[in-house]
Every structure is written in structure tokens, then in C-alpha cells.
Length: 339
Image 1 (cartoon, rainbow, N blue to C red):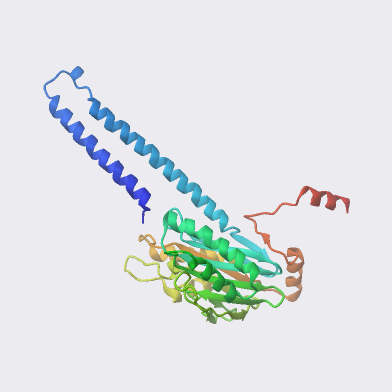
Image 2: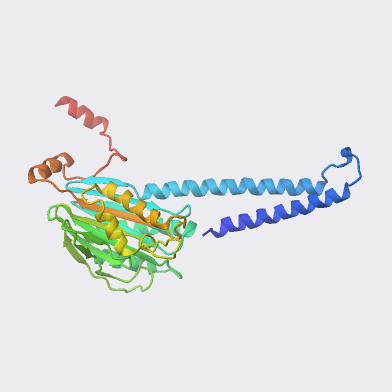
């Protein structure tokens, strides 16, 4: 779906193109039978061409600005891949047009890790602007409240306050405790994330409350689950399960579970792209109508010794994966050389 700004640019360019076509036809009729030297564009045609060129330059600048905004949006959702103690985390957004109304975010919250997936109603520039505001509210509330339900309730109240028409948004927010391997969560209107156990059983994370922006004093609840070695959590936007093929069939949750189980034992990053690939293969020639967002959290398998070795390498602190390497500072490098 085009934004209103892009739509107006296309309408204006189309109108100028039609005017230029009429002027060209008029000149052709007027110049019949005249020598070639007399077939010179009139001032009217030149004026229309100049105006059309100006519109095309404006459109190119607009497209460049939207592209740059989309890159900023992707940076706000970073890191895309993360190794954190015994856990692997990978996320990706597949926008249907430029800016996305979907987002995900991984936050360091002291000894815990905050995990967020959101879906703002609408697309384009307005959704992109609201996204940055909403992510700021989540970051602040997540640091003030250890209970995800309290954090989500505060975000909802802030979003509704002093807003004539606040955006409607679905949100899943969770805190992951690496000591207890416990995930405490609140799901505000997003499709229930799936917890796929190592033994192939599936649990749905449904506790929470209504979507954000609907009721200022909405009540929210928290739920909790324990992540065992080999367990995997999938949080996703409705664009994944509601993606349709050319026969108007939806991908649905059963196909999502099957796609993940088909690559059981793979890394979070491999599961992420294999699952998104399965969704797009299902859609085939029918382009998705909504943004696709997926966040995968996997607790590594292995023996206790292997997990302790992995834990010591990761130092129990979040660090970026291969796509986002954190380099040591000069002071750290000097300290290492002095040892």
C-alpha cells in the first residue's frame, strides 16, 4: 500500500504526462504539411516537460529519503543476531513496502534480557514514526518495572495519554533470566508465541491483555515458562501466519510449527531464515500483503561441560553475533597486552 505522499506524487506525474501527451498530439496535428524546421516544440510543451522533470526529481528525492529512513529503522531493531550465555537469538523483518509497522528489539536489562516484538497498525511513514516513539516507551518502562505486565501497562497508558488518536499496536514483551532460565512475559494482542519443546510438544504463550492504544486503563497479566536445553521460542507478527497463497489459503500456525520442527537442532539463525523461506515459498507468486516479522530464541543443547564452556566464552553477557561484532577499546587492548 502506498503512502499518501507517494500516491500524490504518482497522480501529479500522471497528470503531467497526460498534458504532455495532449500537447504533443496538438503539435503533431498543427505541424502537418510544414517543413521539418517548422516542427519546433512550443513554449507550452517545453513548460510541461520542465515541470514533469521537476516532479521526477522530487520523486527520486522522496524515494531516497524513504530508503534512508528504512535503514535507520533496521538499525533501531538491531542486533539481528545475538549469542547470550546458553541462548541464541535471531530476528528479522520482511517489510512489504519500504518502512515497516513491525519491529523487534533485544534489550539489556541488568542481569536479564528484554525481548520485544511489536506490530503497529498500518504501514509506511506514519507507522515508522510511531514505531520509534513506541520503542522508546518500551525501553523506559522495561527498565523501571521488573514485571513485564507492569511495563506493558505503563506503555499503554503513556501511549493513550494526551493522544486524540493513538496508534493501535500489538506487543509481546518478555524478560529472560539466565540464572533460572525462566522467561516471564506479557502478550498484548500479538499472535501467541510458540514454545517448541525439545520433545516436539508445543506451548502457546497467551497471558497478557488487549492491544495497546485501545483502553488507557487496560489490565495486563504476566505468564512464565522455563526454557530447557533444546527448547525454542518463536514470537512473530500476524503477517507470518496470515500470509496467503494464490488459492487464498493462510499459512497458519500448524504450518509454522511444522516448518520449525523440520529444521530441529539447527541454530536460531538457521531456523529464522528457513522458516521465513517456508512462508514465502507457500505464498509463491502472491506477494505478502503484510509485513513478516519473526524472533527466534533457542537454548543450546549439549552436555553440561559444553554448556559451561560456552557460558565462560560468552561471559554471561550479551554480545553481538557475527553480523554485529563488538570490538575491544584501545584501553582494553592495552590491558590485554600488559597481562
